[in-house]
Length: 407
Image (cartoon, rainbow, N blue to C red; front, side, top):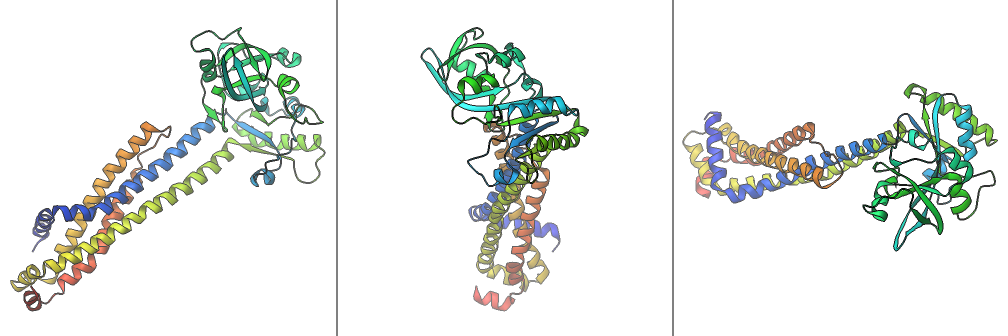
């Protein structure tokens, strides 16, 4: 019997038992769909995080208070070791940087008439716009004069402006931040959240104003403490130089002889960490989803063993009229492979549909991974071949006399 005849016979046999064949394929279908969807979701998460980090600004370094070890241990009491004067010193004494923006954030109650909102109030400096790649949609941003005067002025994020003023103009209007009157001088373009802070739903004020009029709790004895300092290097090649120069400057300013009381990270560092985490999660999710492929393979073997028992008379009759062991082995293997490959194709279609759905319903730009599709379909076909061998061999080794008597 040639391959075409075996394929035709296997197809007719499976078609005659549609419900059983469909249920047998179910494990393979679910496994393939899960693997493709999980890999696509993981890749989408990586792209989303990369896009978020790119919005932080070009060639950016982040100087954060507290040692790397302190922050990695998740301490709730991070020491306030960076002050506004550190940012000023970096701007004036580090030649490889083009902009420095200190930031200090706190949550405050914003009141406009009978409308209230509890949002992040970010104290910052004029260089914030260029360093963090923000644009002003209306009005102006904080100026050096506002900093020197601790002016009671605010710049609103796009979302917060809509929440408070709806379609009405905001410029020149007054509102209360933490019980203090402020005047709206500008509205930012919509940007989205990054570093866990949604600037679209935040208020930006001069950092001196926040320290002198809004700050709550202890103050640093060395000046206005900041949450972090963002530094823009001259170009990508200057980032390592800038990091080295900033480290030396801050060690001198802070009189450090042993461990640093700050640490510096870059977009590349953050991206590497994020990709490592999402890559590990993607691999874990794909491995968990792959278990269902194994379960599907066991299901195929189980059904094929049942099929061998049910078709004992057919096997005996075919061997009695001259079918060889290879013919019987080939037919049962082809049946197992058809089940697994068909399940793989259907599962692939469902997985691709799931990826499209994820792209529509979530912010993740979930991509269709060709390698994941090829891998899933190949594995499902291999599983069908592997788990089909035992029942196929059992069928091929049946003695025709015994098979006909048993039937």
